[in-house]
Image 1 (cartoon, rainbow, N blue to C red):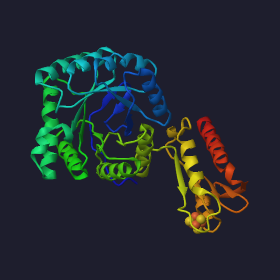
Image 2: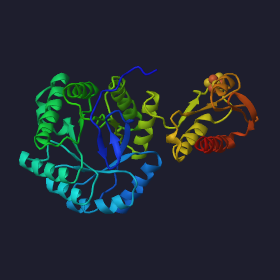
Image 3: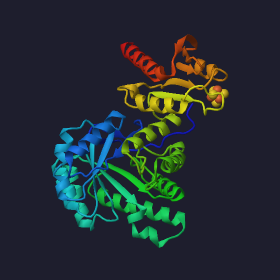
Image 4: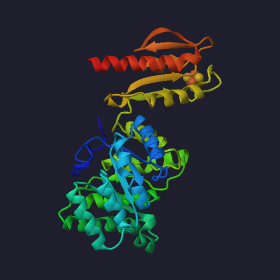
Length: 365
Ligand code: SF4
């Protein structure tokens, strides 16, 4: 049973991936390579595709980067978004190069007439635009110290910008209202969601490292997702963007909004632990993140990895597959039944092969 009801938003098509209109929440990320180096950018996007990234954004700080858009697009499978600040001409070039969506920032893209030129071209090419309002670059926000007033300034900026697009009958709009403060961000999204039904791209900007950023993003995004707000997420981390995708899936899965295909249950370890469980589970997480087609499963496969035979078997029995650690190896469970013993160095490979078998069987159903 779900504890929230998702807001009704418009459906926007980003190069074949739907955002909004009740579609599953889309996971996206952003490259941190130099876009001028298109080969390095493609390489990173391929790594992101492997862990389930569904839309990827690249920043285009200059024309040279924009000229690479079609090259990058030709070599990747997921839709490509161009992130543009300051120079609307770079956005025009990105459209020419066949980009799937533009992300512009009303705080810095320039005068209304430039935005209007951009809107006309985007409309001709059927390319959606994300209005990405960011507290850091919006001077109106800095007039206030109060979070509510800052949130209103963020939401107003997005609405004013949306009006320019709407004036040209342009409605393929996605909106984000990011601040690094959770209270400001949540209030801004709520204000905007009460006034417009454009799909919302959620994120807490500049949230920090894998550790602190995951916590901050989960707290902020969790509040909004619980309230039914949000159609796509990007977890911003000062880290390899692959981590952003893994965190996003884990967050959405914990709220039963998406399935990463796998749920790993592992104990916190204690003096009874008889295997190097911390390392084994971490290896397991890395291995399963790249199993192809896992995310197609509507219900995740539950795998328990437990450190001892005291509390381990209970959890392992409840899972689809489970191992409870013992001195001579782990007791292996499948659907609640003991089916054998596995040495600690074979736990990951054994469980991965069982998961792959399950996947093969489920696709044959
Ligand atoms: S399952 Fe065993 S090893 Fe793990 S925390 Fe519980 S008692 Fe300790």
